[in-house]
Structure formats: structure tokens, C-alpha cells
Image 1: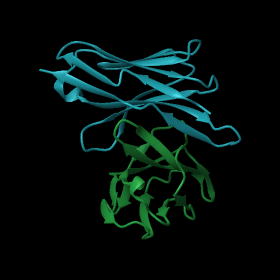
Image 2 (image 1 turned 90 degrees about the vertical axis):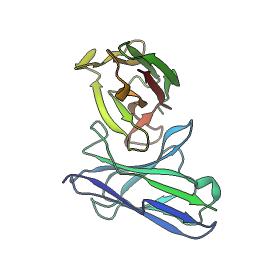
Image 3 (image 1 turned 60 degrees about the horizontal axis):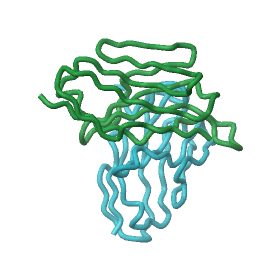
Length: 112
Length: 116
């Protein structure tokens, strides 16, 4: 089944404790993105990647890192999480920027 | 870079009425305009998209129109049903200044409520 998976789905953590949210797709898509969704602010892009080792910042990259060492995986790293990073996070993948994006199920992160 | 504005932020209609959501964009080079629907507690899913070489596209009760000159595009839902209640996002492709990589820019979303 073609899909985008994210783990964990829910996470409660404390300020400063490094965490990684994994994202994996099995559709051989080149384009992958991370978004955060906050009430009233819609979907804001954090980082995106056009292919392996090709990444760029989106609208809100501060406090986040990504890597794209393999085509299928695009992990989101929070080196030192802070409460303002409490949000719902979505990973998405597509053949290219001008193609349908398939979203993962979302990760709800709470930073205390 | 691209700037996408979406209106209205909330929209309530009676079942059977039509609903229209409008978006404007700033980058004349944008050439791909998708619409996503997000039901409560679920992930966004594509419902329709249009490319810049087309002025209108329909899929059953859903249609999208694009006016490249005015830089706006709209989602039209006819004969609305309660299951159309959701948040709808428009988006436009573009490129950030100083970057050669393309990306999608999303509007802030419209909460559509269809009353029985």
C-alpha cells in the first residue's frame, strides 16, 4: 500500500531534550516536506527536499534540522525543543513540487 | 517568494447551496494550484488541482477556476452536503528568492461548515 508514515504519532517531552520525528514513504517520491499546523495559521512549511542531499528552508525553519540521506526517509530533528514548537506536524511526499502531495498521519508534539 | 492569501477564513452555508473560496497569489511564474481538504482530525488530501495552461477544471461537484492575469484562483463547490464540512487549503507553487528549488505555498485555510 502506497503511504507516508510518521513516528511517533504523539509525543510529550520537556524543553531541551533532543528528539527526532521520522518520516518514510514507499512511493519512490523525490519531493518531501515537513509542515507544522497551528490554529489560525494553516500549514507552514518547515523544510523541503527535492532529492537526496538536496534540502532547503521553508517559512519557519528556526529550531529544526532535517536530513535526506535516503530517498525514502526525511527525518525532522529538534535539537533543543522549546514550548513554542508544540504543534501538529505533517510530513508529505510527491513526485515533484507540481504534483499531488501525500501527507502522513501527523505527529502531535507537546513540549513542556 | 510567493504569497498566497485565502478568503474567507470561515464560511457557513445551507446544505444544497454553493460555496466559493478565493485565493490570490503574487508570483506570476507560479504554474500549479492545488486545493486540499482536511477533515477534522485527519490529514490534508488533494481534492482538485489546476495548472497554468488551463482556465477551469471540474470534477463532479467541485470546480476550480484560474485567472492568471488577475493572479487569483477559486474553488467552487455546488450542491453542498454536510460531509463537505472541513478546512480547505489552497496552494501555489513558486520559488523563494535566492533559491533554485521549487516549493508549495499554502493559504491559511477556510473552515467550511455545511448545515443540514
